[in-house]
Length: 241
Image 1 (cartoon, rainbow, N blue to C red):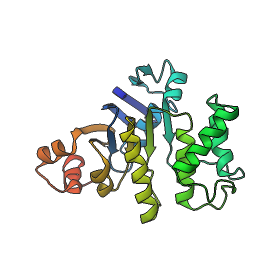
Image 2: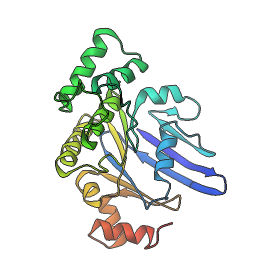
Image 3: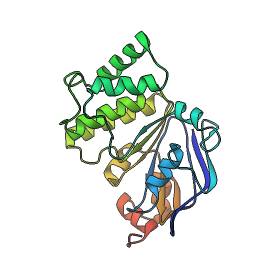
Image 4: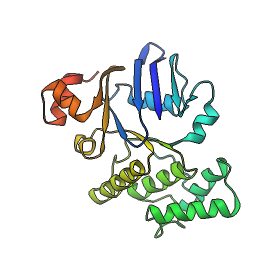
């Protein structure tokens, strides 16, 4: 489970996140939505221990992101916006390197990497260098890297951005399987169809503040809109921050 209370983060004169709270339970997919600049990525980076909040607190499986970041990193897998892969390494080497950073080694590491290559259908390109990969291939490698230590919590920052239809469908199936395994999944997206297809819960952030948190049905009832895109606009308004 991932939980946050009253998170705030300021960069210079810009307050990116202001009093954000959320709860993402195990075995459910929670979407973090908002216009560009609303504070989604900053919130996710705080949860992933990349940034430290100015105020507030967050926990992953009961571990504080500020006070116990090492435990949080063991409990969480992160697919950042922009995969950040090592272009001169093969897909297999990228995944194995991160497995080693998490303490896996020897036969256990090789077996885990092989299992992910099979699970994510990476066999055709596992031993090619990542430079020159398609976006879909890069996302699969980055996701394998995020899952190599078998985390119970997974954060995905716009995972389908730039993917074609078939790659998007394949990634959706993987996300649904993560939920079926009882993991906590949090992801951000601008694609309302994707949210409607995948998500159990939604948190909508506008100008750094949570405007709504609850299930999709609760969002529709509150806004009086059956269409998710219209419901989203009702919460955040028509103007981007």
